[in-house]
Amino acid sequence: MKRAITRGGAPVLAGALAAALWTAPAAAQDPEFFAVSLGYHDIQRNRKPALEGRIEYRSDKRLGFLKTLGGLMATADGAAYLYAGVSVDVYLGRRWVVTPSFAPGLYRRGSGKDLGHVVEFRSQLEIAYRFDDRSRIGISYNHVSNASLGDRNPGVETLALTYAVPF
Image (tube, rainbow, N blue to C red; front, side, top):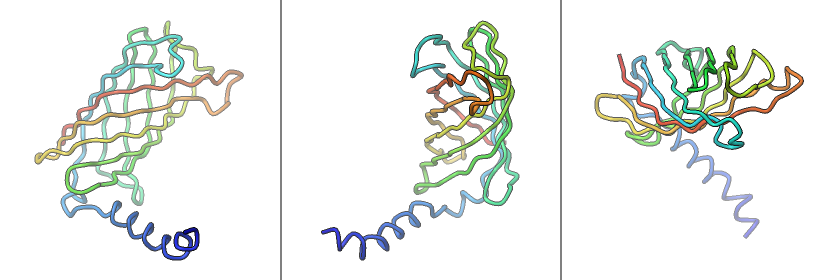
């Protein structure tokens, strides 16, 4: 069994991965987006949970295969995060889009959770359904931390519902 996986399995796996990453022709012409998210901030540790809202601009400009984005996150307890970064859309057929992204930014605690530094980094994964008009509705999960720039690096995770409208 192991022999079949190491010899014949690799090409099958590579082919499946290539098929999953294949983008539909319409996907290449996706416009820029304005996205609005509403979620639950600090879902893992649950020490300072709060409602989170986000607005985000997703550009159609590219840096190689990456698209640029920028946004603002705010929580009900006064924390805020201003960020800019990159993302990539991976199309799974015509309707489903998986979007990993990375965005460094500036964090202000307010009366919310102390993340240990003003500079923070957000890693996010979003899975969205794409409508005929190219708008999307999806669920995102992200992690924000300072990558040990500060003495403390507790990090925070958010689960959110996102609606992205093309313009």
